[in-house]
Amino acid sequence: AYQLNVDKQFKIKYGANFLAKSISKSKGYGYLDVCLKGAEYPPANEIKFGEKQKRIVSDCIIDFKSKKKVVINIGTGPKDIKQGDLIFFDWGRDGRMDHTTVFYKDGKRAPGILSPDDLILMADHDGVHIVKLSAEIKHDRPTRIFITKFKKL
Image (cartoon, rainbow, N blue to C red; front, side):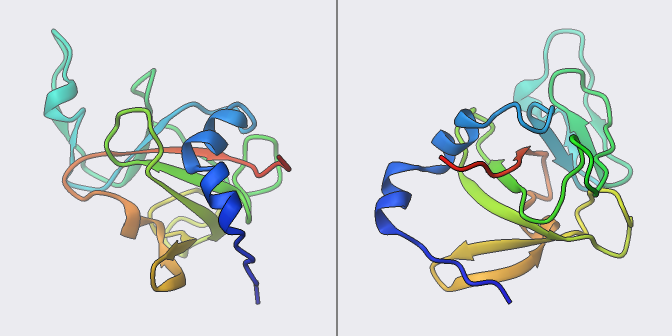
């Protein structure tokens, strides 16, 4: 069992955006777009001249800069995600982090690879919950995330 101690001053002083910027390169990834099957990518309001929108045929993670699919392993390597790593969500896709969760456990659908089936710890006004990553992903459009390991501030 895990016990989370929340310090109200910490929440005020260190918001999600501050945390993401202060430890931004520790996993070696920039911003990632998580797309669920059926979403359109890139979103209509982000299409650049000459770029075509396509419908996503299977759940995937796309590197924001290169627009290529990436595989993020679950493990102990420097680029692998592991239990306790932070996942920041930028739902507005505006560069500001809107939500923070903690990677908890590998799901059964794609063992050893980060996927929407994996479990995360999420806190809201009702308490702390274990939910699938897909619960935090927008179904009609990509959701931008940022993954980092936790460091002492």
